Length: 535
Image (cartoon, rainbow, N blue to C red; front, side):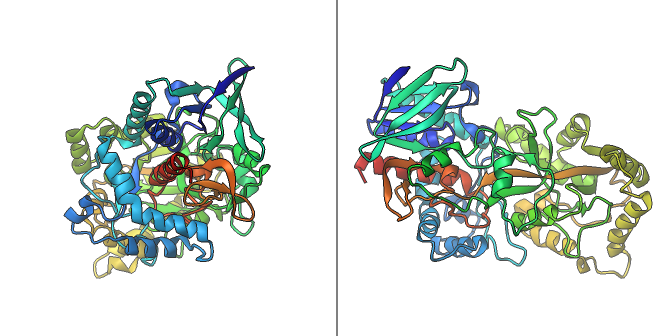
């Protein structure tokens, strides 16, 4: 068995683990960072994610005349997340986030050369205006892949003096204590089977959430909420909760394990990175969201951008574990998108002119790519022909062509002469979204689905896709792991998704969206400060 000695052991090589290690190295600490993945996938989900961040009171908001303050942000956060004010740790982290996202995330990233796109987006508005009351969703120019790469480069530079030991392809198997405090951990090289003991008086868990595997996700699923028979996986497969349970044996508490941030509209990755890998589509606001029979889900239509948590519950309660999005090429070219770095190459590769062209003229490239690569993205010249393709994909006769036609006709009737289209709630929500400039660029003006020249028709076969754990190990504002009496376990810290982005669940039941990457940075920097100062 090999032996390593270090001041701090960081378990997990995602964004939270990398930032923790970076800050510790800059303070002169010796750090061993154990990452289960390969060197090429160092960075975890941050390598794949889109890079959206909910930030409060930034100069970019001020330039857009958006008035946003920590008080406004906390009001939105507490209301939309339905946080329990008696949960002191979760609410303390929520307050810390809105008060420090500008300085400790936005300004800190700018100092590392990270730039943000000029538009501030308005997401998770709430079905009744109870979500983000102002736009605050900032997008990293280069996606979070650029963020991860810059953080990794900074980490290597800070550790160039020999204070950093990076163990890729290693899995922590056990936490060790001595005399009532942390003493390090055991790890195994998953390639060779060789064991390594890392002696360290401080251990930081940055191992991601609980839902990398569906067995754990299903075990934690709230009994009072609908759960689909099948789901896709958009989480990191190594985020299996093993270290959560290892910490439990030391007295730690897992809280809100059943609170999750999932997506209602996913489809299988055409070239999956792991079993069950799903892509999360950003649903087109103008698409009709249908059940397995081709009927529009209602009576309140499903429209993205307002309440993802509610959308997931509506999809989960359907008779069959899939839904359909019905749209036309006009809508898809302007609105269809897939979350993540992989399918946003213009942003990822910082190709501004090409990005601008696709935004203004339509992203026909992505629509054609999905038509070519995905069996779940169907294109047809007629609704009857499309119904045949939909039934063939599901090996069923669920959708009668006449039913699909009637669904389209009923929606299009809203635009008949003498009719007010705003009588349809989906149309009203689209018009509401289009009042904000960035949304107007990416959202079609309401029109009949069967509008001449808007075809061909498109049907996308969608499933719920799991993503983030909103619960995790209970921590204080120093990212120290707490026991059942709320006392810190000496030497044990937890950051990022493993800590429920702070406190064991700072977001509550739903997120304002874009709180995850900043939550990783804030909890990581708090842990590093506490370790360095001895808090």
